[in-house]
Length: 263
Image (tube, rainbow, N blue to C red; front, side, top):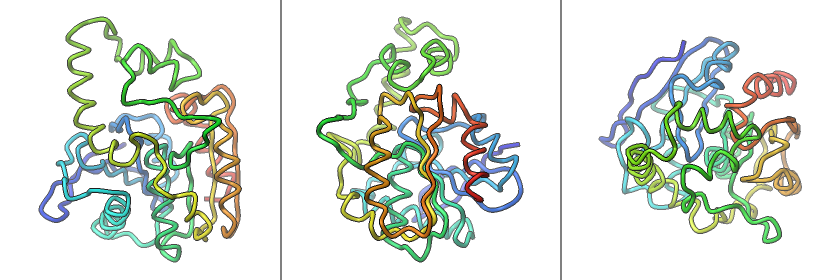
């Protein structure tokens, strides 16, 4: 069972979802945020002690205007781990969270011994530009984020009508808050120099990608792999019939990939 609690950092409230038993695993979410009933968190909690902090500006986590750039957010990640009382947990990040996790492993390579990156952001290939999620409207997101577009519509809307004006208003208000934080790292492109730092990562690393990812296509897996020249071991998994939100479409496959890598 996943439950919510809070920690305080620099006088600001940070929400954390936690549950399960076993090896400590810190999960860093993507730009869409995360909820306590997320299917991947539930599956992970069957094998690990899961800690999923919400970035400032997401859910019950208070805004943190002092986090201005990638370095600030990276150090914030370590502050959260310290506040949770964890020592070198398995670090797992999806999309934006994967970008942050990779930066953490590059900035402090001796503090991260196992790293799993699920379709991480952070690189930019001019021949394969990443769509501008900040300009996307609700009806455009399912095709960008899911292999199964009908399932995506259902999951993203909770069964509500995409054309309902109130749904659109609520969507825009929520996105304005969440993407205000994410925009510091992803807008206009998610290139903050991570590619030049990947060589510093020493942790055993697992790359997980959805075969049908149209947001950050699988060609980026090859770019990440090419940069991870110093890792203790590199594992790669391409999951069929999965888009960018692999954890929503194929949570069991993500957990299976972690277990197969020995994490």
